[in-house]
Length: 509
Image 1 (cartoon, one colour):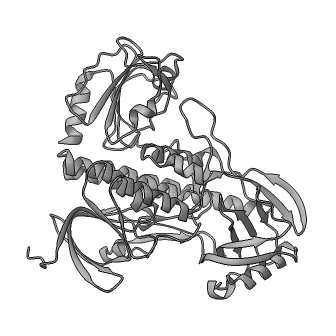
Image 2 (cartoon, helix red, strand yellow):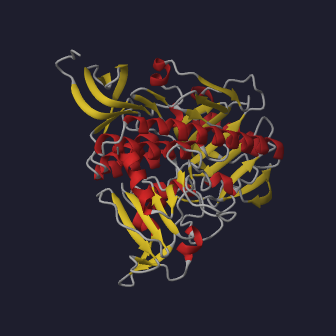
Image 3 (cartoon, one colour):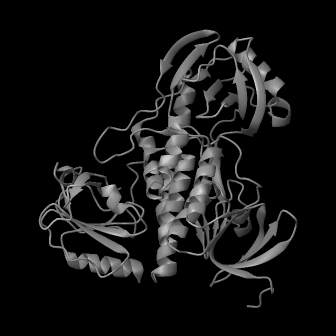
């Protein structure tokens, strides 16, 4: 293939530097995979939009080294203050907490505006030696059996050609990459009512910063104001009962227009608004691409699926797309795994995305039916029970398992242990990093695989690497050999060490 003289080469080109693209870039960076991540914006996403990070996603971000910074900048989900005009009707919880247990280190939703999440993930990428090429747009590409040739254009209009082994489209719900591939993106409108969302300075006696304020029965449509974490702005959301109305941020999200809307719907005449930092309009929709892989091009995040924001599932599903894809790209590009391993990204994530889309839609419908405030989001929204039991990468080799037992394909639980020196070590500490982890729980025979990318821990039994002093690992896992994938799911569960070698040979080629 003849390429232009200004062609540069990389292994993975990522289009889009939102949370999805950034998580993938961070994962690739720690694996030593050469990549470029480009975004046509000048400084990253500016709005609050996806604000809830679920417990499972927090585990992902813990592994990637970003969770402490995110919690420092965010906070727990506040109670909702329900209003009828100027009357406080009552408080309610919007999210059910996770059941506290040794296996779940994060038991509540982390609330943080999306622009801050993007800042923190960008900083984490830079710590690992990567960087986002802002002001750079993917304008076209061709793909063949060996890779992708893409054209990039910077803010000044200069173009360059990049040859990559793989292209990952993390360029949002209107993905230009998906459209260029001709991949169908089918779905349905979840709610015909338009919604205006804005980040704005709001002042007034009614607005304490300890609550998420909602007027579910306001004339003209629902009004919600949430104080954003550790910044002075509020997120204002206003739906319009008149489905024929077309909100326009240029008209409806000026400080004056927002002050008028809030005062009219809340009944509080003293509300004052200042600078509007960001505004957008949407109608809730659910849609999914018919496939997430086309040869050397892969779709992730909103480019692959879009959700109603109800239940806080969209951003979290997107992060976990990237987390699933990162280790597989690393295995193909660094460990000699067959290219066919990337087919399991499509198999695993299309199934999960379809399930989560149904969940998001059901939460949205429950909110509409409630009428007097948001419905309670159940523990299924935490995404801790999502699994890959039906995946071609899953091998459950044990028999006669009791009801409710951990199975291959399930999320690998955490558990507190101690090492030989008596230092506290959690299983998640052992999992943290880009490697596979082999756990030998109990007295099961175990020989450490001869592979630098697999770490082996004997838990309990003897001689043990980790002592299960309180029995939590035994309670969570039972006994046997458990091969934990780099994304924290049990790939193999067996009692026979020979199965471990066979599984690793299949994954790494």
